[in-house]
Length: 430
Ligand code: SF4
Image (cartoon, rainbow, N blue to C red; front, side, top):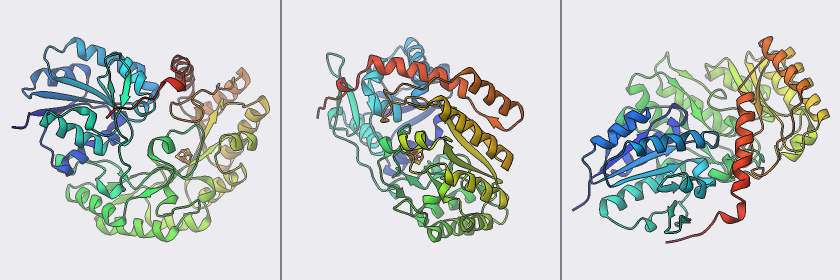
């Protein structure tokens, strides 16, 4: 007879999209399990304590800057735990990049890679009492505390699983594209999801929208690394595919339904912002802003970061977006490795010019994120003059962002990276 398994989720706003994808995978696979969402440490511990199941699987997911805070929460939950059969697993991009760190921080398991097939196989293995070494996409602690990897989890077509567990009444943005063919050296996306685009079919997107409309929802948003790449395998947009998507979504929505595309939680690349693309968006979308990734005003830094564009399309993108009635929010990263004073001056100059054209500048600080080619790179120094100029832009209402907090995260990530040199991180089992 199968064992009873309860899944308890440490449910945080910052990671709902990823968690919803996992719950959707369990729902689609029809794996029997109880489910409880813990929105606080206390609620999570209470769900564990209240479970009468044989095994309790506690899901944690977090980004690299939150890893220390989540480890403290894990310790607090464990301190309140007074039953056997509980397994804590950390998944997401940080656990994928740094399974040994996650195991050392106290989790029993790390989920490595895309989690949908792993969570299904893991719950099935727990129900069957089977060894977890047969579950793909895991890192398990061996007797010496070393994180041993099982075989890799497959990267499936996006249509294999929905973006959210609709039958549980949980909704959110629809993931239309996963993976990224660009190779920005600061970004975790290609490392986590692969270097090719995988697009969800229009039919699958329409099915999501039908479910949402059936539950009275009227706003549709999307998750994608680069919105105007939808349907395209390569660097250039396929605007016919984008139109087929947007028209299909509109058809599924009631007349007062709204489509948000190229805005939160997604963005567009600057070279994709053309008059033709903007005219197309204007016919379908409700957003009044576009998020555009510029990242630097220095061609040298853009080339070193592998962005795949220089500064020339950025001014044009802002001008074109404004001309078509969008307010551009333009992302900049300060402190990228190798950035010199003149590079920062070029970024500040471009940011000020774009603000004059009508853009708002979203400022970030470079963080050496695990899994990226720049994991071990030294963030460049950001001098007081640059700080003052960013403050001045913010006071004028032309800039916003959490760049100071990110500078603190960057320092902590750099320390942790030193404690975990790359070469000690891989051994395989199963
Ligand atoms: S920053 Fe954007 S375009 Fe660059 S690799 Fe990441 S997701 Fe792709």
